[in-house]
Length: 155
Image (tube, rainbow, N blue to C red; front, side, top):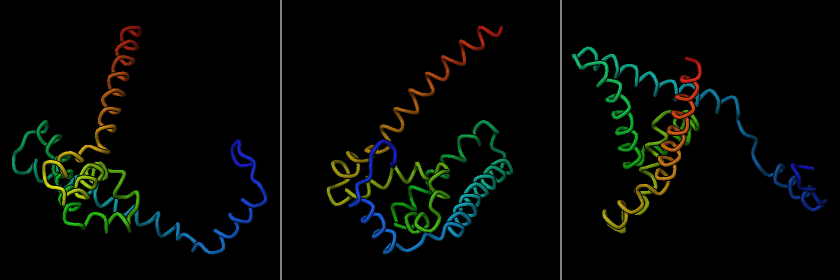
């Protein structure tokens, strides 16, 4: 039994056939690539922070500027087709940091570029990001209310 669904003998045959023809996944290699490429993205973010601090930008502005720079770079790399090649090798290493969100916003829009910039790119820009932004906003409001209540009760 898998979950709440009983496997019929035909499903077991199909599963064994799929396993026999599917190449084994190099999990250790995938984990290491995700770790090192994700770590490289985070290191680039830290280097940007240090650079912006070095040139005299205030800490509050830097906290906004670093993510904006990473999002812009990821969207640009998505637009020119490089990000997908990196993500294919790194997997979650590129998707977990904020660069993955930028790719999720830019990729659907790029697919509709041939339909024009207004009706193609503009109309499809928030196809994936819209629900994510709405969920994030709603979740942060609920979290803020719960946090406020707990702080009020605690003193």
